Image (cartoon, rainbow, N blue to C red; front, side, top):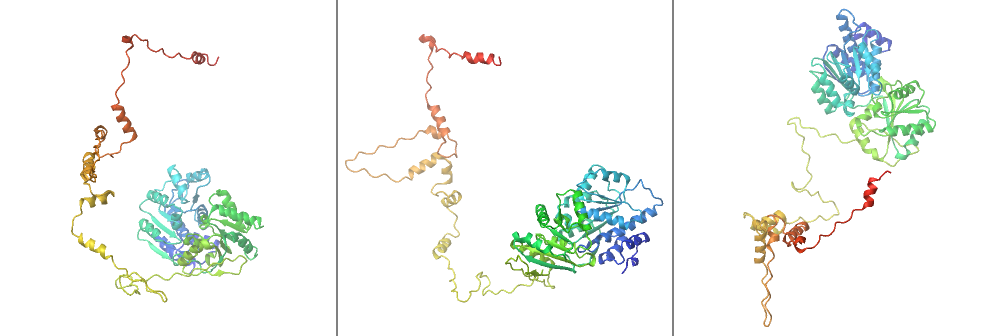
Amino acid sequence: MLFKELPLIEPVLKALESEGYTQPTPIQEQAIPIILERRDLLGCAQTGTGKTAAFAVPILQLLFEERTASGKDQPNKRPIRSLILTPTRELAIQIGESFTAYGRHTGVRNLVVFGGVSQHAQTEALRRGTDVLVATPGRLLDLMNQGFISLRDIGIFVLDEADRMLDMGFIHDVKKVIAKLPAKRQTLFFSATMPPEIAGLADSILTDPAKVEVTPVSSTAEKVSQAVYFVDKKDKKHLLIHLLKDKSIASALIFTRTKHGANRVAGDLSKAGIRAEAIHGNKSQNARQAALSNFKNGRIRALVATDIAARGIDIEELSHVINFELPNIPETYVHRIGRTGRAGASGIALSFCEGEEIPYLKDIQKLTGQLVPVVTDHPYPADLTAPALPEPRQQKDKRNGKKQPQQNNRSQAGNNRPEPREGIIPLPDRKPDQQRQENRNDRSGQAPRNGDRDRRRDGRGGNERTEDRRNPEQQRSNQRDQRRPERPVREGEEPRKARPEQKQQSIESFKPGRNRFASILEVATIEKQNRPQKPKPDYRKEGEQPPAAPKQNGYRRNNRNNRGK
């Protein structure tokens, strides 16, 4: 099928012919007619299949037809009619370039706004008016709060790379933007992968959408050759330098997990004589654009990037993608290697895997459903074993919708002990304690005793009743009654004197329910109250003179008055 066979207008076809596009990709072939019918769309296709042109071309045609139907062009009064929300600056710039290229003959204006740069030029362009606004969530909300952007005239809303938007934590910003959009609009939802969270968000903002899924979810490009190298962490940079010495690698996009790792890898390559630069979130927008431009123009051979650049980098004829570190999210692997082999071209994706990254490789193979070949012929091999593909999930029974029961190989139902192996004597079955069982049977059906209840409650003995313990006087009386009887007096032995009773004042001063042992402060307070007060001498009656007051230190008083002299 050709673009000429699609219901496109002449200005758009002329621009596509100038760009060298004659045959649409599968997602373009299916999505363009649906969007032209003004239906909501849920598009899922692997990266590098032309999703940008799939929504840019029909949007340009719809806006061109609206302006033509209005009668006359009003350049100074251009409300924003279409909003494209993207997660990264690079992707926003790429989409803006696509709208400029495809709409060069339509007269439709587009503007790109993103953070990291001054907003002066962006606000000036907004005052002049634009038809299509491509924005990142942060800068868009900032300009909306300042009053530079109004979304009340939006007729077409595009959420591009929705899964990446959620991965980067923009879900709350996206919901804030959606709340400001008109209820009557056309929504286009594009994503490279379709996890359940994305499907739930799509159901909440789409109305009777048409679903376009040209490839299986999370599948890799067919013409991308994949390989993995098992190597220790300390030898990764040496292996990378060894591979880049091969002149057949014309350009290589190298991915790391962290920003510092990207700077370190770029520095190691530069020391080895390989021209390389790093691009990540800590770089300024001008520095990122300069590094990306140098890589596209061939001034540098290697570009080291983090996952923030995995989406939005469209580099023609990129031969190699190298995963210096495997991503911990398997979907990110699909986006990384999707930078090569775009639009039907071939490419090579190489990955370095250390011992701690074996689980990441296992998740990647489980997601893509294919084994990644292992390369052992290199100077820095590591003694690791490649994980095997997981077994397929158990299928449900179509008749009742339940999983088929697994076969139970155990001898008895309820016996959790596995079958005995050969050469091992099995342990005898454990028999219940007869004495404990008899005690349990004897006490069954009887109410628990007070002592047992108290013992279970606080761990103390159960001889006293609960109300006795709450009253200290009654508790002490019960303890005296339960005391062991005294030894009888022998012949010729004097009878023992009775122990004197303790003072009741110290006990009465305590509050009920308190511990019988008083604190040091309470004992001191009681002793102070019981101590008789010493009478003060009356000097008038006795004729004595009161002691003279101590003399004040005149030196200190004079020193205070004469301070600073």
